[in-house]
Amino acid sequence: MTIQDRIYNRVKGKGRGAVFTPKDFLGLGSRAAVDQSLSRMVKAGTIHRLRRGVYYFPKTHPRLGILSPDGDAIARALVGDAPLQMSGAAAMNALGLSTQVPARTIYYSDRSFKDVPVGNRVISVRKASPRQLAGADRPSGPALQALKYLGKDRVDDRVVTTLRNRLSRAVKDDLDAYVQRHPRKVPDWIRKPVSQIAEA
Image (cartoon, rainbow, N blue to C red):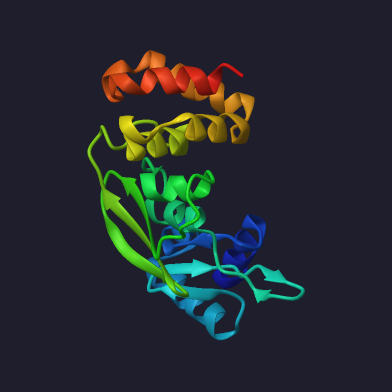
């Protein structure tokens, strides 16, 4: 079996919609061989190149055709095992607290990566401080980021109700537990709305 065949099998195992980089396949051969195989797969139409070094196994819809890759999947492919946190603006949109779809979706990690254009959107991963990464990779991370982004004066009853209704019981419990266990990583004012969100 060729390196290209092994790469394709691994890509297929990830499933349609997967985003990946050459580093995901370095155990299968040299970097040059991996790059060459991915280039051939792009030319064959098996995968799409989002930008140099970032690839997408396209997912299709019966009526819409090829769907755009998910921003979370792109960001995770870039950072690998490093911490990843959605920015406050992106979390607002994801949680239904804002109807504005930002042209640039920003994520935080422990280092920056080159932007990835996706249609009329851009996915950015920026280096952030440990405080900005509070709650990274936790189910409650987006909710925590949204609350911090809004700030004390804008977290009102509507916000609390929206999050209380939208978040699952497990996510609400995770949010409450994180705030209780890591008081130095979150502002003091956030405890009250989190308690209200988690109570039901």
